[in-house]
Amino acid sequence: MSSNVMKSNASAADTVTAVDAPELRVFVMALFFIFGGITSLNDVIIPKLKELFSLDHMQAMLVQSAFFAAYFTISLPGAALVRRLGYMRGAVAGLALMMLGCLMFVPVSAFPRFALFLGALFVLASGITIVQVVANPLISLLGPPRTAHSRLTFAQAFNSLGTTVFPFFGAIVMLGRLAHENAAQLSGPALDAYRAAATQAVGRSYLGLAAALAIIAGAVWLHRDRLKGESHDGASVFSGFELLKRARFAFGAAAIFLYVGAEVAIGSLIVLYLEQSHVLGLGEQTAGELIPIYWGGALVGRFVGSGVLRLASPGKALAFNALGAATLILISANATGAFAGYSLLAIGLMNSIMFPTIFSLASEGLGTRAAEGSGILCMAIVGGAVIPPLTGRIADLSESLSVALALPALCYLIIAAFGIYARRPVAA
Image (cartoon, rainbow, N blue to C red):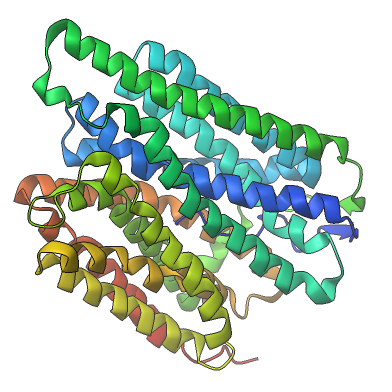
């Protein structure tokens, strides 16, 4: 989800002349890094908001619902915006919306209400959605066509690097100073002061991110006219829904939905899971600092997987990794101590190849309609808004995070079935 590379929703008939611009590639790499990192910060703030507002697990998971709902609602309007403005100006528009979302955390932290936090997250995620609509085709255009694949792989690694680095420093900045205090042990003025300090720490963190986004947006704006010959046709952005009549594509879209949902649900529960006395019994900050192991596994696995996929069937590799993830959940849910904790964190390694492999298998055989299909697959990322709260609800009803992990495990089993189903190439 995680926060992964996606293709543009623009039409296959859209054209632009490639530009050899190393400085633009640096900016786009920065985009992948920062939107991947910002997405993973949700895993840090969920346990803090759960504590501050006395939420149950399902309510806390609404953080992910507010965030990933933007993919479903903004993807197609974002594609239309990019068609109207062009890639570079569209990227600036997305960055500006991300800045607005980050800045909204400042007043929200002064008047802390959970619903206001969700609103700020939705605006932030809306900007990320628009940037992702732009980023993949943009990095493809910034250099010779023969090296486009290597640039995309490199950009995807920057995305994973962001998801690995941001949670570690986010845990220190957002949780560190307050790590030894607990809202449940406070009342009256002391509780009010604690809530104010905690929300202000979150607000300051996002204010810093807004400043970084402003720098990147300014740099992209200065190069807004570097792409020559850019044009976009007027085909409907809704035409891709017809592709859901194709069994392979529809199954693939469902697999994207389930994969992002499972990845996000597990990432969201890591801190709460590792805090349990029968697992590692860690404090909030220490548990938060282990989140990079989960996302770092995806980073390492992405490099290894790119080599493996040259030799192995993508469908079989996907099935293997999905079954591996389900097995690790089974092990973690039935173990204790470090074995339980690190089995859960190791799922990140299994996740590594899943999104791009599902995406490519689902898109196989679409030909000139591949860009339309990518829009639907982008919308399927809304799984990150649905599966996590359902997982939280199971945790509330069963009073067990281990039992709740059964839902992500089921998602992985269905993904494995898709890998087996799609193991053979589409006939020409």
